[in-house]
Image (cartoon, rainbow, N blue to C red; front, top):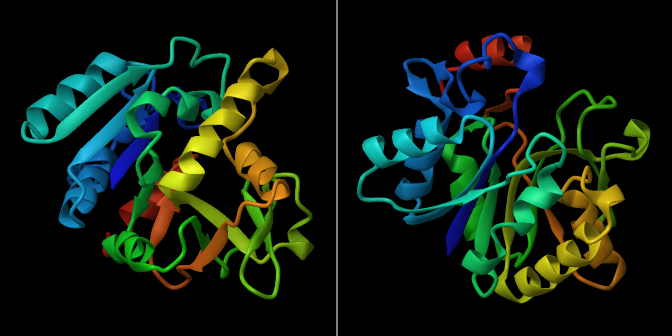
Length: 241
C-alpha cells in the first residue's frame, strides 16, 4: 500500500500564515501538520509516499528530505496549482500508484492515528472516512449513503439535511478501482472546465458506473481540516493527534 499527499494548494483562506509558508508546514503543538501526517503513515506500516506539490514546493521537498531521510518519497509538481483543484492534482500521481492500493490524504488534515489504523484495517476496498457528528454547511464535502453503507453522493453541493456526515479528506482506494479512477480523471481533465473539480467528482462518476465506495465512520476520533485561522486555533487546542 502507498500513500498520496495532495499539497499543491496556496491556502489563501488562512493568509497571512501561508504568505511565506506552505499550509502543511504550519506548526501545531510543536510539530508541523506534515510531520504528524507522515509519522502516522509510517507508524501504520506505509513507507512510500507520493507528494503532489505546487505552491512553495521547494520548502516541502527540503523539509521531507531533511526530516524523513529514510522515507521513499516521490515528488510530482502541479505546475497549474493556481488554476486547478484536487482532481487535477490527484491525476498527477497516476504513474506512481495506478496498480497499487493507496491511501489519499489532503495535506491540511490533522488527525488521530487511530483513524488511519481503522481505515487500513476496514474490509472495504474503497472507503472514505466520514464524521457524522459535525455541523454541515456549504464548505464541507457532504456524503449520502444507502442502507448498506455504500456512498451514493459525495460533494459540497449536497443538501446538508440529506447528508449523513462529512468526508474528512482521507480515503482508501483499492488497486482495481485505482486504474479506473485515474482513467476517469484523465477523461475529466481533458476538458478545462473540469480543472476546478474536486477528486470526489471522479469518485461520483465511478459510483454512477457501478463502482462501490463505502463510508467508514470515524465519529468520535479527533481531526481538523485546517482551512481557516479558526481551524488552526482549534487544532492547537486538541491534544490527541
